[in-house]
Amino acid sequence: MKIAVSAEGPFLESKVGQRFGTSKYFVIVDKETMAFESIPNPGASSTRGAGVQAIVLVVSKKVDTVLTGYCSPTAMGHLTKNGIKIVTGVEGIVNEAVARYKESELKNITKVDHKPDSWTSENNKAALAGAFKSSARQFVNILPTLAGVVLLIGLFNVLISKEILSLVFSGDAVFDTLWGACFGSIFAGNPVNSYVIGGELLKYGVSLFAVTAVIVAWVTVGLVQIPAEISALGRKFAVVRNVVSFFMSIAVAGVTVTVLNLMNS
Figure 1: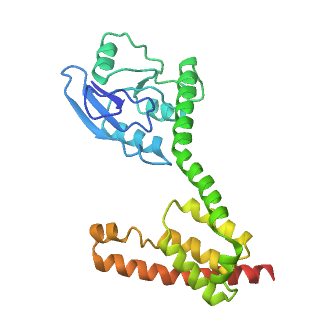
Figure 2 (figure 1 turned 180 degrees about the horizontal axis):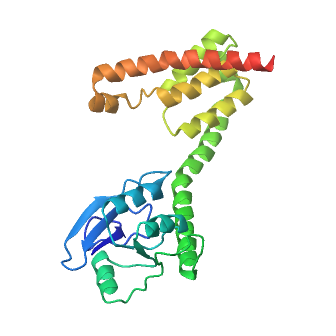
């Protein structure tokens, strides 16, 4: 009998994964011998279709039982249709979870004839806990970006004046686009910051040609990171890619603003 345990690591001593579809590994254990095989979950790094990939993997390994923290009703339906039993609400270490299952300390809350749209209290608790954890992680991840945006707006308003910008951006579409591409190529940071700078430039009367060039070059050209790019991908590739991206940012800015003007006319 083969038991698949969603896990955060590839070992029997790893922590049980709390979500079937996005756990980093599946540790497949032979119930009798405790021999095991660890398989990375292809859905762990996917933003879409994570559950489907996990289901296909588990079914292909011909397991009899799945132990996990939480499994969505849809995934349960597909697994049970393939004769696989699911035990949810599992916590702790993989080998301990298997041992508890062998000793019948874990109740099989899903039978083969289970209807995927029926929720138990255990499902609701696990889903709620998973949602809170996911929201907290996303909030923590986005905090640096939010802080950078606020600081960037403040620095821009303090250090850059309309007079300084008027010396650089004269209103000529060709030269403004060129200067915009130059500035976008030099600066580095989160792409979101380019939108902040673009918005501030528009407030100061800089043309849309220049702003578009700044945003495109910011994202595609990286003079600050070029030493690292040369080290990783080679000098020729890095130089050619940055030069092509620079001229493409000018072309994209011209085409974008021209099309926008035609649409508004």
